[in-house]
Amino acid sequence: MVTIFLPLVAGALLLALPRESRLSARLGGTAVALATFGMLLAERDAQWSVRWLSRPFTAAFHFGATPVSFWICLLLALCTACAIATTRVPRARDFVALLLALEGTMLGLFLARDLLVFALFWDLMLLPVFFALLGWGEHPATAWRYFIYNFAGGLTLLLATAAFGVVYGSTDVIGRSGAQLVGAWAPWIYAGFAFAFLVKTPVWPLHTWMPPTYSGLPSPMVAVVSAVQSKTGLYGFLAIGLGLLPFYVHEYAFTLMLLGAISLIYGALVALVQSDAKRIVAYSSLSHLGLIVIAIASANPLALRGALVYIIAHGLFSAALFMVLGYMEEREETRSLLRLGGLAWKNPRLAGALCIAALAALGLPGLAGFVGELVILIGVYQAGYTWPIVVALVAIVLAAAYFIRLYQDLMNGPEIDDVPVRADLTWLEGLAVAPLLAALVAIGVYPTPLLRP
Image 1 (spheres, rainbow, N blue to C red):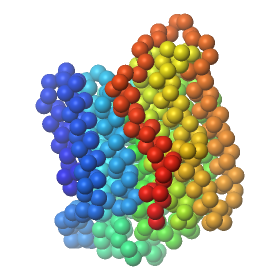
Image 2: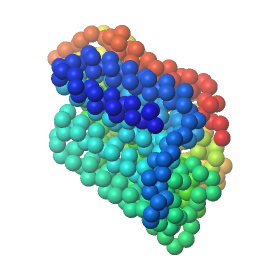
Image 3: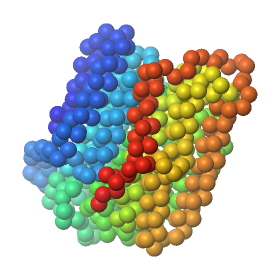
Image 4: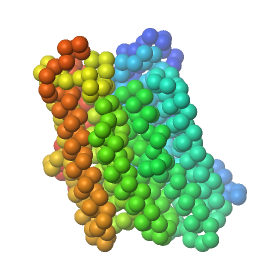
């Protein structure tokens, strides 16, 4: 419980600092995120529960990590610390407070063992991103598009949660064995959950809020959103779909796989023709997350283990990519591939960091992305599906094409004279992105802890 409220309270206390206290806000925010990381490790098996509703169904403020949410929470704390450490946006105090609020609300969601509490934090986690888009985004319309899409998903989630509680008698069911729902209302309840999860992931055609959000947010915020908030829908399918309504996940597996497969190819093809570096990574996320949706739809135990590895891997390399592209944009004052080139000659450390993150994203053996992709494909094949594997292999080839293009256009080739070239990565920027890259290598070499049943 303290783990959840530490970043929320710390974010509120930061607002008491003078508005121009950028360094204090960064130091304090980074310390809080690192403290949260340590508390998660120390309290891995701890649970806390207080009943707060008895009619028309029982509900409780019940918190505790599941085997899946534990790893995602560690990813969240790490990405938040790395993002805050190098934040240089205007009004940094307010921005860091929003990042801590986002961390706290997402911790509440991933640690919730009660469906009603899960739904509460689902809506609360929208607010920090919405206010960040209003205050630091490129256009207010992006903020409202993000909010309307995701609030619509949150509304169906809340209705499905209420219906589940009335039919089953309790919402204190996440992670509880035997808490499965069947009956006339169950398909409709599953549909409400599934819609919310598919919007948040997102998948085609519910993805149109995502590219402008990812390109419009400042890089520290979008690093956390792409790394972790996009996983809330996937976690919902794992903890709620497969945990409470597995029959209906299997019943509608083809529809789920089809949406994942379309997202795989569509995201890859659109990324291939983008000239905005952040939009390339945004559409690549649409493609990568489609593969995890396919793994979940297969319901194969090995594919699900691969899904967890790929959830963590995608979080690490997407956060690293957005952070490095943010550093580049700060220096070069543009992120257009048409206006950049030859940056590696005077920015070797920046080029090296981008290279490692891009290689992880395109699935190079020895890095975490490859492990996740390989285990998912083997698991999906064991489940008896072949056509999604063919689609996934095509998307993996396309991923190599657009990430090589991204790196080549930005870092190699002739320098463009009218673009100012500034200092290479500072020691603090390198220190911020290094844990993400190191984790990609570590999981790629030794993924066993994430692959346990």
